[in-house]
Length: 454
Image 1: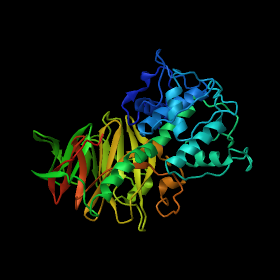
Image 2: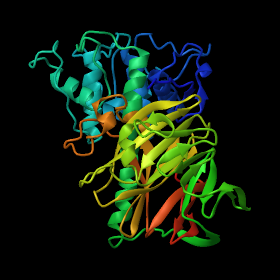
Image 3: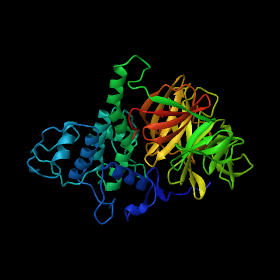
Image 4: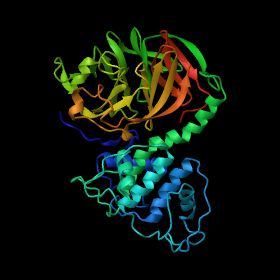
């Protein structure tokens, strides 16, 4: 299989041209993500200048924006070389509140000094500890175990915030550039989101009897029967006796539904194969179509589709693990639609082996939402593909991943958005950020949430 590179920023709907100097590839996705979050900025001439070295002031500025999003309160800070009114004083005060940055013994901060890789690792390790992330990677060959930054490097690498050099070295004295900072911040995003939502979620759960919601969602049964609902280009798609496009004004019939399991028009999942109206796409070795899907998907019995709002990327998700074992691993296969080809594969971890993915929706460029159910409860999660490890074209591409413990790849990060009393839910779509659609007992349900999810 040939790997096709993206021409638009995945999950953003933002073209490379937003920065004139961004190269095509994963780093551009990460840059656009952190820029849209407001954690980094470009230059007035439309460039990002990713190869420019980062200094200590710029590190503090980026950290300050992240901590501001987390609601951190600033601590008084005074450095003899940072005068009152200095542009970096506010972010420094935020970073100091969490102990992320320190001055020198002579009372200076020395903000113009270039930031080294080991110094960045030290700061990131402190931030990871605050966020409750405890992952470690083996120590690189060029860093002795007694090095002052050894533990921080192991933690930063383990969490996927930094990368090794092609020769497997870390290069502790190397200077950090803006691309590397964007890489670290993009990988931090799911943990920042989880930390930000955790206090509110805990507060709701502590004040209520177990299994109850603070403000129960309002459910309305609509006069429409079907077996699946999803989204394509921001619009709901219903599969019943026919395939329909849904809007609050009513349903518009767009095709036949014989054998259709899920639809993200023009794509349909039918009898374990993908079809787009022109071609049939099947797993490697399956025959009967163009073989572009991982061979392990020959075991797919139930799945979901989600098409991003730009129509460039199609996500195929298995509802359950592709093995006869008590696994929590669900596979996410990302296809480029023009031209059609496998782009990436990711692992998604279910809450428990009895759970299943019952719906997936891509309502806007920055929100890929999963509905995961177990028993009479369903949970909505926002999923960050960029925070997961792409294992396409590896040994795990053709199976075996589900049976491994611990998991040999980093799964995508997911942040809990809401918990809903939805027994036997099937499918997921959104009419608005606070209004979702699903099917319960074959009837279309409109769920009005107490607040918007994004």
